Length: 258
Image (cartoon, rainbow, N blue to C red; front, side, top):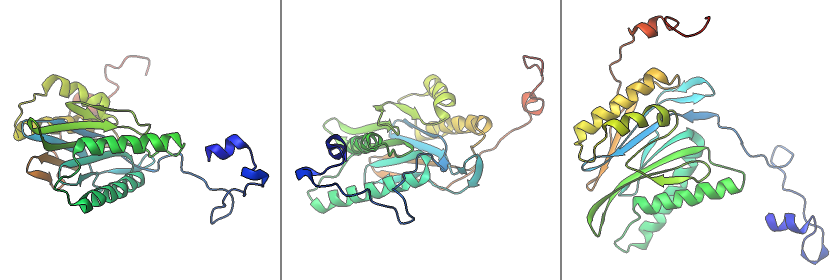
């Protein structure tokens, strides 16, 4: 504990502080400081009726694409969706926290329930707290939802990363999508998009990531949330074309001696 470190190795009253707790296998407790099984980019943006979110279903063990049917988008309560990139086991721990949070909220039985803004605030505190303990949860989280407010149905979309940095935006992306998908969304996103238009736009972003991100796979999952509730669609594949000249001859026209 911090107060124990500040006081030195002695507990209050001059008695000797107990030794560190040993792990089951001997030695002091160790924390994982590097992600092992990781998920890729998550893309989300608002559209006319709600929020759409998408990602692939791959999870890599280091640079090896080990798992191909991992679902990284989940519903949280009645009004929210969460998507995660990064360490999958940490995401499972976060889902456990959220299950406890929503159960506790439900037990109040007061006719109200946590909305996406409250859950995003909670996740921000969790991520920042774990960062300050030097035991971070290695995830970037996207939280979207719709809940009735004073002005009617209010759409919400935000994200938080592993050190607690957070913000709200009309469109967000994590991982490699920050570099490849966000420029497309800035050019083509509109607030009044229908769901069909939103699907076409998110598929365009996913296709670019499939071509450019070595860890991406051609198996994607799309989810939406509206005032009526959340829907997570079954995974599917996109039609691809690999006959581009620069794909077949990557060194053609390249700058340099190679």
